[in-house]
Structure formats: C-alpha cells, structure tokens
Image 1: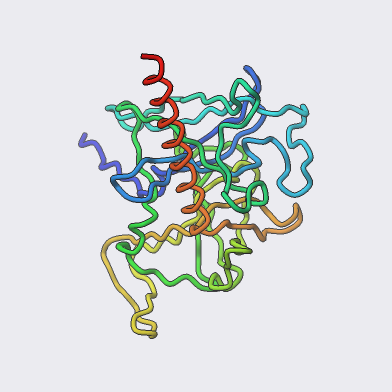
Image 2: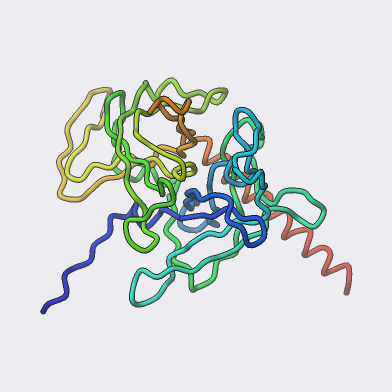
Length: 279
C-alpha cells in the first residue's frame, strides 16, 4: 500500500508544548513558540509570564493547587529526525544561582505584560521554525478586523492532536485591532480557550483567500496557497465565565524578543571579558 502524504500546516509545527516543574513534580502545562527578527537573527522562546512565575497575572495568587512555584521549564521541541516528527525535551532552569530570574520581560511594562522571552542555545538536533517578525511585511497582507476568524494554537488541558502536536481553537476578533497602543498593547478575541493554551501564538489563517488593503481600499485576494498572519500571544480569559480572552499584540512580542537578544549579547560580552581577564 502506498504511504499517504503527510502534510502539516506551518503553524502546527511552530507550537511548543511546555511543562512548568518544581523538581520532579509537574505543576502545570502550557504553550510557547519561537520568534526571531529575521532569518539571520537569533531565536528566542516566547510564552506567558504567568507560566514561568506560577502566579496569576492579575491577582498574584499561586496558580498551582499544590501552591508550588516552578523552578524549571521543560520545552518539547520537534527533533531533526526521521521519522518526523519526534520530540526532544529541553529542561531550562528559571532562576540563576543568586535567585534572579533567567527570563526576560518587556523593557518598559516589565511584569505588567504577561509575556516573557527565554534565551536558549540551539543544537542541530532541534527543529526551529520561528515566526519571523521583521519579515511579516513580506508575507501576505491579511486584513484582520472585528468578526474575522483567528486561531489559538496550543494545548488545552495539556491535550495533543498526535504526539506533541497542538490543537487549533478557532474564534473571532472581538474588537478593532487598530485600537492597540504602546500603553495598551492587547486586544480581545472571542474563542473557547481553556487552561493550557496560555502562551500560544494567535494567527489569522486563510486557506484559500483573504481580504487585503491596498491604496486605502479593500480587495479580495484569491490564492491556491494558505496565508498566515501572526497576531500575538494568547494570555487567558478575562474571567472564568467568559470566552473573551486577551491577546498581547505582535508589536510587543517584537520588543520583548529584541530585549532578550540584547540581554544575551551583553551576557556574552561580559563572559568574553572575564575569559580575557583570566588569561
């Protein structure tokens, strides 16, 4: 029998399953993804801040029923292997020996933004497929407005579609994304999301056609290829009784990623200085 063609949509392969742990105890699971400025720049892991702190982003209360705070995070990457896909788990400490955090926050909003970046060195055994932030201008210019569909690609209740591949939850934009500002870099979506999807990428996925704006006018674009636009990070619902949820805009993600790269380069420079001084 001929083996059927195995095809994955690109956003499916960009989701990362993560577990927040204290020692050998798994406290919670969530979602992460990779971003990079462009194909030549470093990648960073992006996830929700409350995933790594173990604290509710609004109330500051402990999220774990065991009242535990994670000391490391396990990230499930797809391996560069055959058969494909298989997974490779990378465990990262969340705190330095002096007790300070390894994750990087927004340079201005700090803990007010429920988004963090984590620097990581990549090996050849890890399959990296980031969202390229600077190259979005080169992607199809999908217009996304109120009522348009968007997908949250992650792991509700820690569930998978197969292996560690994510589940797509699809809902609708609930406001004008153009209202996003530097002071309030979030927008609302109406989507039946659940625990475990925090930290997931939110995308506008159009399998065969989409709306675009050119010269101030709307136009319909038909294509045989799917088009995807990265919109931001899903943080969580406004409350437990609502399907409305917060998305941190892609512009804020770009700023945090840039800050993480700056922190990484500064650390490498200091390490180089220490090595030179010891000679």
